[in-house]
Length: 271
Image (cartoon, rainbow, N blue to C red; front, top):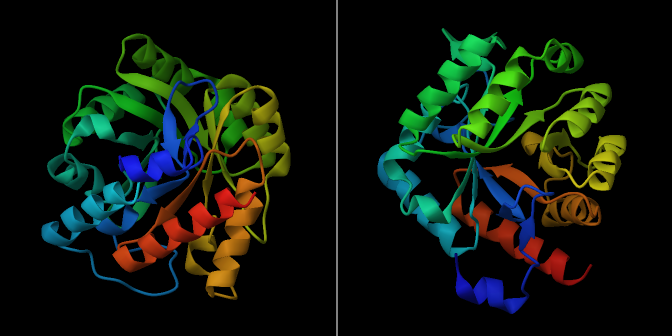
């Protein structure tokens, strides 16, 4: 972590994730684009970068003060590449997921206890680590059913008790599911952008001292106004919420990443 960035305003860019004990950078690096470029929702097609480009991106992210990297088994070979290319594991907060696989160009979901355990163990091997900072349930949209059936959650708690996982949560797709996840789990990942705000979930999670991460903060590149003003307004909207810790931004463009970090720092300094 860049000491200059942290010392410029302690606690501003590095923020607590609820009561998990984890300290996360205000922006996290989403890594779907380093592992998969088919059946993705970005407006412009892209080529998967080579190892040298990914290594450079990770190094630049670190220099910018980013310590949060978000991946998933459904992101192609993202986990394997991070395991090979991430330097100094202890400097990174790694978020991965369970429940969704991407097989033969389509998503397949399995929330059974057996699959959950196997997925966690596979992620540990792929990421070349002996613990995962945060594991999220990668919802198929049936948030409440997944949480109420309990086998996935129970297995994640078992892995957590065994020291394999530091915190557990869910990447939700419904308000009702988000509210339930905030009550049951340590962290909830929600959609929060200029067009959609899962406000009830953020408010409840904050009241319960649960962590909140944001996906699709920049609408996966689909903002009608792609200007820096729109990016800044999105960040103002998110960081004005006391319950939100970090926004996950998926990019393989180092220039975009640096620009986003500069904008985030400016927003945070002026809240």
